[in-house]
Image (cartoon, rainbow, N blue to C red):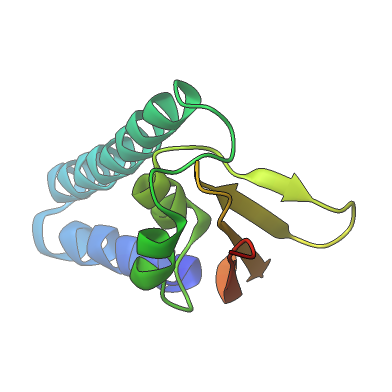
Length: 125
């Protein structure tokens, strides 16, 4: 979801609760928004904890990872798929790579935090 849209919906929820139920409604709505933010934070921390315990840039199968990737995925979704942090490629670009034991590598390019393109490189037989 777009961050601006999410915050706008949260503000609308608090405003409607204030209008309908007064300060108690606004307090309840604000509590619901904070709870939702804590759930999102918990999801990120769980994903990063699991990824932090795996070798950097390693996956079980680069071919299977390539099959599961879709343009528009966020880095958090990719890290959740790989269960590993990626290996940064280059200095300026937002390019990352994951490799498997067989030497196959998936290279990903992110633009504005979303997966723009990806390619699978296999070793010569």
